[in-house]
Image (cartoon, rainbow, N blue to C red; front, side, top):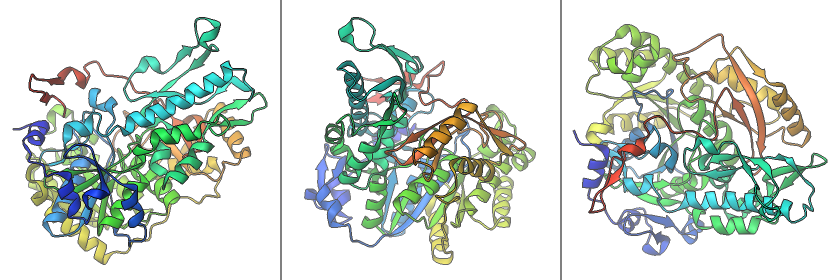
Amino acid sequence: MKTDIEIAQEAVMEPIANVAERLGLTEDSLELYGKYKAKISDAYLKSIENNPMGKLILITAINPTPAGEGKTTVSTGLGQAFGRLNKKAVLALREPSLGPCFGIKGGAAGGGYSQVVPMEDLNLHFTGDFHAITSANNLLAALLDNHIQQGNELQIDTRQVVWKRCLDMNDRVLRNVVVGLGNKTDGVVREDHFVITVASEIMAVLCLAEDMEDLKKRLARIIVAYDMNGKPVTARDLNAVGAMAALLKDAMLPNMVQTLEHTPVLVHGGPFANIAHGCNSVRATKTALKMADYCITEAGFGADLGAEKFFDIKCRLSGLKPDAVVLVATVRALKYNGGVAKANLNEKNMEALEKGIANLEKHIENLQKYGVPVVVTLNSFITDTKEELAFVEDFCHERNCEFALCEVWEKGGEGGISLAKKVLETLEQKESLFTPLYKDELPLKEKIETVAREIYGAKGVNFAPAALKQLQKLTDLGFGKLPVCMAKTQYSLSDDPVLLGRPDNFEINVREVYVSAGAGFVVVLTGAVMTMPGLPGKPAAFSIDVNKDGQITGLF
């Protein structure tokens, strides 16, 4: 059996200009990064502003397990299947982070015969967007510390600096550091912190900004610290906005690549869904909607994180209205949720499946709360039995959602035709009555409690005293109407990663709250979730190499 990278390297890609041409783009509409990657020009983006919007399809999943679910694989395969049905579709996906690539998760370009290519480029440096975001973030940090060093005219309280440096790598030793050690000219000594680039507010800002003007407004609002009187100090106060925008100018342009079957893909932005809002850029999504009749996009991790944030943050702030949602699961993952060890998932186990399907059930219920038609798809494995598949299908029909089997890993677009037809049928027959989970006017504390109760199934929320103080402070500063961005483990509906299936009788523990004023949401840290992940005992980096001919191996 060929590996994902072997399949990708054997693929015959089309020049990206040819892929774009089928959507009506000329070479003048592209900024080429070699033969197979391009950014879409500002001029083209302006030219389609008044185009009608296509249908918006969200791909989400059950809680991730070591068994794998295949959200990006299904997204890619569905896009390819639309092409086989002569439907004009464009994928709008997230850029992968280097952290997981070299850590435990691996790459994020799909799998099997439903991949986005060039796979190695996508998973590594791509077009430099993440480097630009990292640079803009750290420029702001440098300007902040320089301001303190040069006399601290703004009277910044060094004990209340909230802006953190970032790096696109899992590196736990950078979570808590001391800066400014050495001579007097080396800066003011203070405690500092790093987050991974995908958790940076700059990432969120870039992904939510409509255009350069909106980007600069959002950058200006970023709170970097508080002064001696407790008042916010912003990026605008530090005169940082223009230089940061200059670094982000090219990163604002959506990137175009292709699938193995030459379906066009816009890959742009990639905030983590467990510690940020988990969606690709608004700009890329809206561009895809105006370029094609169907836009297929995805949100990170399980629906309790990615889909909730897609609906309650991205759609709320951008005006997007999803027309349908595809919920991805596997029989293997459902059995894992039912208590089966990873090594035994190939064995038929109806008892475990019946128990573990409660996780799928909760996600179906959650998605239906938003008024969007739901299609459940099983990303099939050769070890799945007819009895197991039939059980899941009947379970879905009983809960008023559509069902289709997906075989895109093995068969590419052909294996997604059944799912594509079911999605098209759903779009034609079922109206989306999308509405967010809560209203803007609801107090922040109640927004958090609403998500915990309605989406996670918690019986309540425990707020640390510091978190309650922060909520009050943010409300007093005028941020009470913002949506909340929950930072929570992706492995469980609860904030405890070991509670699988559909846990009950638990509480969500909120330890810290802060505002991302530029992005336009309030971040809520729960449980032990970290904004700077660490590497595992055997990082994926151990398996990655490049041979004398420049061919990369081990990147999956």
